[in-house]
Image 1: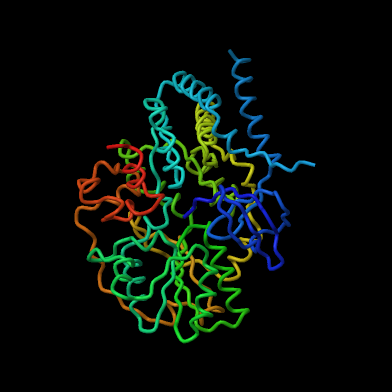
Image 2: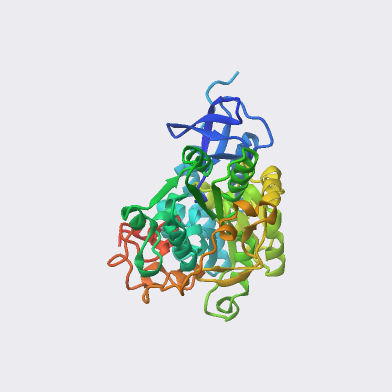
Length: 78
Length: 377
């Protein structure tokens, strides 16, 4: 129930909905809980038929960098 | 211009990263000299930890205490009985999320069994599907039995607002929406936590998708008041291991703060639009009964009186007899983290995912279902 799946936007429709691709499965979801616009190829987090947030790709890459930092920091400490 | 979006999931499942984090965590815990006890609140995390074998990977270093973050697990039997009685009302279609259909009520009867008797009970993927079903069946009453934590509440708010705007008169909602911070506080205040040696929780892995909606701010109180680190985590193996590492480092530094590992979806403030829609339609219940936790003050939401013509609990007054729990089921203890699924004598023999006795065996987030699926017992 709290499992949401990152999905790719295939097509934004006019009635506040979008066609998304969730691991190969396509379905129409509601965009009514998003305050920002989405466009084709954006990634959104889909939960029970609604996009609840847009992926912040920059932050995703930062998280991976943070990981690299952890390793570097530790090496430095050692 | 980029046409192919990078699929970041691969990065968060990378085996080299997993291995490196495993080594770092173990080194840090060894330096500390004590096993770290971490409660993952969310059932989604419980399943991810089991699925990727993270509990076995860190055995002897980190002990995971499974939390109550599974909406159908925490639903008391009386609410399941209420769903059954609502479905039995004449001229009614009852819609709910699929997870609830198999949860047994008093006497072992589930919505699925009731449907086999001929009652019109439907599992929906999106709550908005019930608007379509109500429009197609204008002579019937449609009751949407809404369940879930903060991740499903805004959707129910949209359902109520849209149905009202569209002038749909035959759609009603039962709100069973529950609130995560209230449950965490209740666990931290429980006698088992206070009694030393009963249950030990050093830190929390905070729920990822609940936090998409509410943000990381609501956890600041627990971190400070109870001096427990909270790290909001994603659901991939690298996410969880990175969160564990962040917790271990806080413990070593004797810190207790809220950190956010899942920044690609979670912000400090959360989803404002979703929060605004929820507050338009819902208000706090003074108290709500949870399975395992008992009565928890201000832990659930009811529909505001401005929308009472759609509140099924206001419209259809139903009196229920005392619920009858299965005498041997220990779901309540599993939900509180004081017992493991394998401590239950029904586990895996009488109670299985295809024939669940307790709610923890039903859901894809329940701890018993996770143990049954991944532990190969």
